[in-house]
Image (cartoon, rainbow, N blue to C red; front, side, top):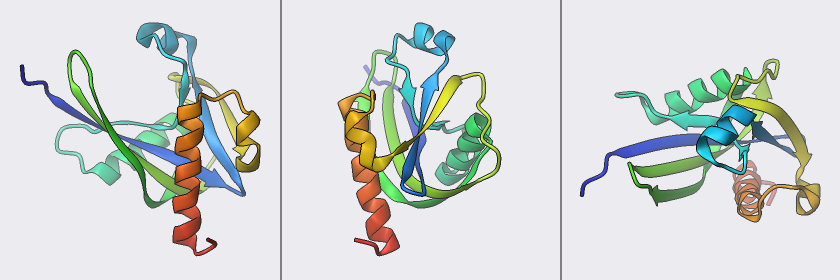
Length: 142
């Protein structure tokens, strides 16, 4: 059976040695039976370019504007109803006032050096580490 594709763009945002991690609202966690940790971002609208979707979703979910450094992590997941393709971008220089949409209830600026002791799932910590390496290489600090 052919499944429709859905493309999702997510931002792993760094600022002053910290990374932004969001906590989904209880309604979102319950509806999707999820652990609840998240990066800002979401699905592309029909005919919407990838980068426009990323900027739009980050702005809608956090109120922030960011600069994209580079793609950091790409994977796909074949779900019952769709084939999901997720592209996560290392981003930096957030500007604006951070205010969450109804999808999220909390945000955390976690120092990258303290990641090992954070409550985030291991896969998320690894994605952050990978994105931070990409971020450092592109900035020329590594």
